[in-house]
Structure formats: structure tokens, C-alpha cells
Figure 1: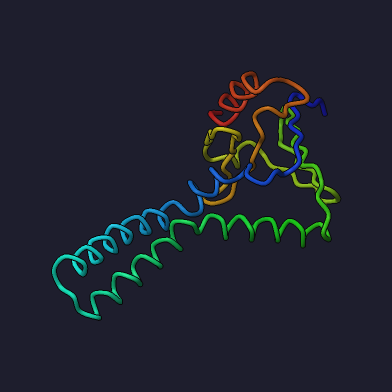
Figure 2 (figure 1 turned 90 degrees about the vertical axis):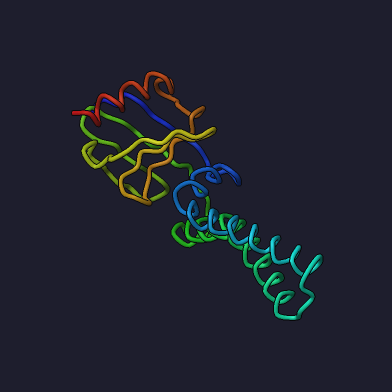
Length: 165
């Protein structure tokens, strides 16, 4: 089993923010922006035209709810961190991804998982990470600048060829 590429990193605070915003909270945040526009509209309506209590309450509720939806990725990030702590009994372990000719191996503490390249459905690139999507909302996240064997550019060519087969 010859390791062609290896990616090692420790989970940093804001490493997954782009991924969470795009994959897990994309539509929720868009709804938040729509509700924010409606909240601003009803606030302006209250200030300049119709000064009734129901309009004021509606504006306040829309603004509060929209801000909650826009920042929901922070809550999701806390849940991911809490789940990782629970999974590893409160310890932070290094994530190690090893790529062989036939499979992807993930090691994190005492956890060992193996994936076949055929399981990778999509590739997503962000500022700090490169994601191998194995489901609609599940992905293997690699830190771009953390390759200990091979380089990111070589890996990108390799993985594109592997998933096309």
C-alpha cells in the first residue's frame, strides 16, 4: 500500500466556515437575507407611513429572525466542534488523510475510515480547504497547505482523474 498523497492538519477555529456556509447553511442564509429585506421594508413603512403596533412587531420579528438565520453557520460550527470533542473524549487529534492508488484513508485519533474513490461524487474548492464530497452534505475536508506527501496542485490533478474513472 503505497501512499501517494498525505494531508495532515489540526482543526482550526475558522477552517470550516466557508464549507459550512456553502453546504449546510446556504439556503437558510439566503432566506435570512430575504427576511432582512422584508424587515427593513416594514421598518421603513412604520417609520414613514403606517405607525401601527402590528407593523412594528412584524418589523422587529423579521429583523431578529433574519439576523439569526444569517448567522446560523456559527451555531452549526459550534455543534461540529462539540461533536468532535464528544467523539474523541474531549481531545483534539490530528486529521490525517492518506491517498493510495485504490482508496482514501482517514485517521483521527483511534478512528480509522476508508473510502473508495467511486464514493466521491463532487469536488469543491474554497479559500483554505478542498472538499471531496461523498454525499450531498458529507465531505472529506483537506487543508490546502497541509500536504506532507505531494503538493496540492499534483493532488488536484490526481483526484480529478480518479473520480472520472
